[in-house]
Image (cartoon, helix red, strand yellow):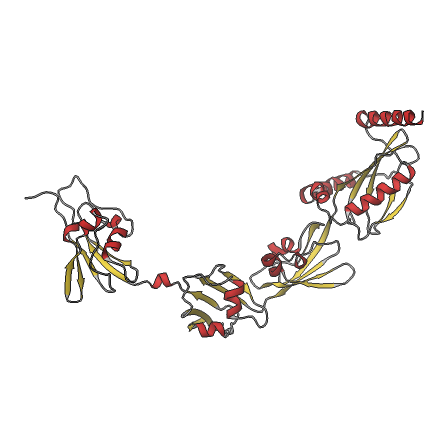
Length: 414
C-alpha cells in the first residue's frame, strides 16, 4: 500500500509539474518588494546586458564555473504533492537561503558543487522531491582597467571572461602583455604573462575575471620585430636577458630551411629625436652569441632563394609584367621586344632552364635560332629541339652573367 501511495503521489506531482505553471507554495514565498517603473526599466536593461554578455548554458557546461555574486539560480522541487519554485540570487555575502530548509555558504564553490549541496539539503527534507537546480542568469559585474591603455575605464565582464579578451581592445603599441597585474577584491596582486598563455597554452597565465578585479597594464621595455625566412614573423616583447637567439629560435619558432643566417639584417634607430636609422649585418656567430637587441629593432633574415644567381633573357618574349603576348596571329608581323632576368639553379643545364621558361615564348620567338652570349663567346641553344624532344639534353650549363637572345621569327616568307 505504501509503494502504491508513493507512486500515486509522484504521478500527481508530474502531472501538475507539466500542466501547471510553477507557483510559490504557501509558507515558502520570499518577501515581496514594491518595484517602481524606473526600477523595472533598470531591471530590464540589466537583463538585456546579461543576455548579450553571459550565457547560462555555456556556464553550466563548464565544470569549474564559479558561483559569482550576481548569479541568479532557479530551484524547483516537490513538497509532497505540491510543486515549489524559487528564484535564488547570490549577493556579495555569498550566503544563499534554500527555501526555509537552510543556508549554504557558496563562496569558492563551483556551480556543480553548489548543486550537489542544494540537492542534498532538499532531499533530507523531501526524499522524493525531484529537485532541479539550474543557473538562470549568470552574473555580470564591473572590472576596471588602468595603466598603459587607450583609456582608463570600467567595463562589464562575467565569470567566464578571460583577462586577455577583456584587455585586448584597450592595448596600445606600448602596452606590455608580459606584465599585466590583477588586483582582486581582497587586495591580492598577481602578475600574468599573456604571451605564455597564447603561445604555450598556459591558461594559469590568463585567468577568468572576478567581481572587484582591478587591472593594471604595464608599459613594455622592448618590442622588436622579425621578418623574412622564419616560421613565425611578427612583433614580440622580449623579457630581460632575451635577445637575438631567443627571438629567432623561440619567439619566431626557428628559421626556415632556406634561411641565410650568414647575413642577418638589423635596422636600428640611432637617434629617436630625428629618427635616424642604421643597418647592421649580423653573422651566425652573432646569432649564436645572442646579440643584444634594443627596443624597436627590426630583424630581417634573407632567403637563399632570393640570392639565387640570374641570367638575362631579351628579345621576342612575353611582357614580363603581365606574361601576355603582344603578338597577333592575324598580323603580318610582331616585333615587340622585352628583357628580364630569371633565376637559375647551380649546375642547371640549358635544357632544364628552357623547359622551365617555355611559357615566356611567343608565336614570333625563333626557337631554332636562340643563342647565348657569354663574355666573348656565343653558342646556339637548339631550343626547338629541347622543347620537342624531352630526352634531348643541352651540352651547356647555365652560368652567371649569361645573356639569352631570342630572335624574331617571321610568320610569312617574302
